[in-house]
Length: 76
Image 1 (cartoon, rainbow, N blue to C red):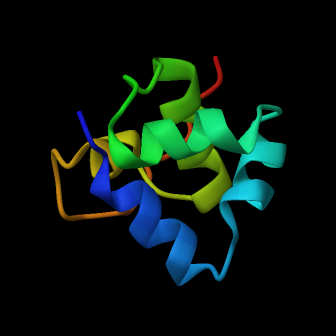
Image 2: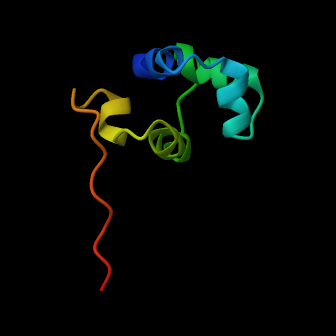
């Protein structure tokens, strides 16, 4: 499954694939495969990228058009 928003967000932030791959502690070639849909994007990558770009994981997955991340959980 290609996550088109991965490329869009990266380009909107003027980042290279290399820079995002470094943020995820992986090779650029692995990240590129996620971006073009050659490899399934693991959940941990979606979570890390949502945190990095400050968007919701649902937005990254294309489930919503609202990029607003959810509020942090309330502490007890």
